[in-house]
Image 1 (cartoon, helix red, strand yellow):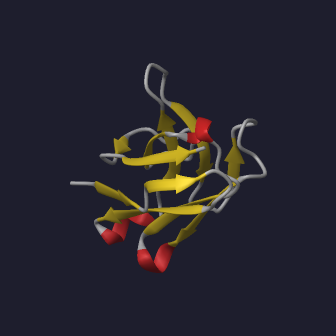
Image 2 (cartoon, rainbow, N blue to C red):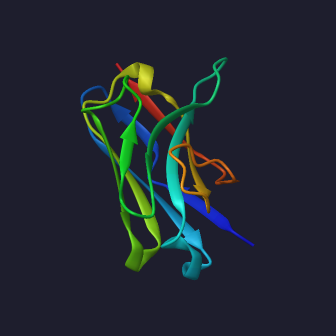
Image 3 (cartoon, one colour):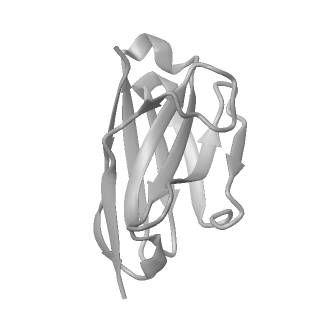
Amino acid sequence: QVQLVESGGGLVQTGESLRLSCVVSPRSIFTFYAMGWYRQAPGKQRELLAAITSGDKTNYADSVEGRFTISRDNAKNTVYLQISSLKPEDTAVYYCAADPRNTDRPRLYWGQGTQVTVSS
């Protein structure tokens, strides 16, 4: 069974940075999976923020490119989302997703989410 566990969320001030982590198990599959980060704010649809393929190709939503960076560490079976210059509108639940397909919208398996709240 594929499991994803996010961490790193919390309450931060406008302008600060944050790094979210998502650990995937079992370890043996991680290298082969595309990974993605999404977020869902209250009353809004879940939106794709960034994705990274098994070959390290990345893509970003236009709204976050330049502030968000996705990366993966295959040795730690972990995908990261570095967020800089946080804004109140970044407040949302952030989810990671995994997919065995070579896709720029990974969405087969999901974590439980981690809350990010940005105060002004």
